[in-house]
Length: 223
Length: 353
Image (tube, rainbow over all chains, first blue to last red; front, side, top):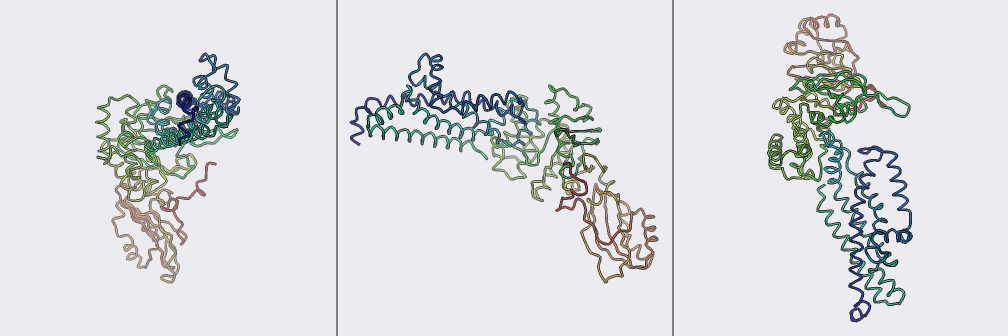
């Protein structure tokens, strides 16, 4: 225990690393949901048999954009997106810059999860909504999203947990955070204390996110 | 009042054309309940989808109180749909909304003011007997209560027509009767025009004033319940007044001719059988029988066996003179198409696929 508090690296860099990790996860989670949710709705609505089938557009977005982005290993995608990060936020270093590639890497993943959640909404409910005179937007906003909300929260939880893992990786290419700390000091300098402390912190972070997400999802579920 | 005229719906499956509805016509006056009975594959679901405009009919017309539904423009389709309230087999309530929230759903769609919505929702829940259940979620309600919420929701947009698609098929017998009685009560009180689509003859017997038998996309028999029940040879009469499967009683009489007799209305009040026995001085055995009140009239459907040496032509003449239909049949009783527990008669009416 004493080793942890007396470790100079931890005392100096740990608070900052924690903040950076939370920043990366927070910012990219925000943008992933902001873009991924509408993208998932779009994928579902334009699919054959959806609310507004658009076979060609659906094929293009689904196969080319989403599948290709998801096929590229995240480590490679991250490096490839460094120029984009520089263009958008003016730098390729730091948690904000890392959030660009983190968001782009996880948006398609989350969109697919959203699509699957919406597909699980019982078709009878959509029929009922249409028969009572709903517009397509009303079907989405008043039936599909509220009815799949517990599943959507669970999907978002999974996505944020994935983001924590990715953010550790992003730390290696300039993002900072706990991942960088673990790699630079723990791994390369054989500082076992730093390694263990950072890993434990990441585990705690994942547990907190998972438990919170599950609790929210359950409280929303009235089935 | 809803009038459906020569409704056709043809689906395209690859190069093949599938005729799901082949010239369906029916007319239901305000304040009455019409049953549409048929198997799966008979075209019931397609009919529902055409009536609610979820699908456009290929040709023909659907007319509600003078408004032609089948030709409304896409922009008016939502307003047109609000004239039809729909009740589903599994209620199809939103799990994320309370009972009150579900009933308020159609009102929200047209931006009804909050206080007016609350008032209307309370009124509707009271109407279906669910006072005090405002804040219950569907998962906390029984099947019958869920269906009541479904009915309240269907009535929220003040529709002229209530379309019920297998409204009781997922419910137990006692709950089925409660829901049917509620529908009947609402029909009278709100002067609704009600169409009930079902495969259960019990539903037709209990609440319908008129009925159509749908098979292979066509109405093959239709009419007032009392009229169709009086036709000895109609499928509907055999289904409305089913005879239990019964073997002729061996040894009781020498195997003579077996007659099937259907009496209705006035003739049901007369003691026909004893009349026959006395008039011809013969004995007869009742093999099977079914007596029902349908559409306010008494009906009886009997299968009787005469002694071998009886002149059955003379007996039938005697019966016909008294307005009773009779015919000679094979002794073994064929089960009815719509025997209550075995709704499987696909062999006869055929499947669409």
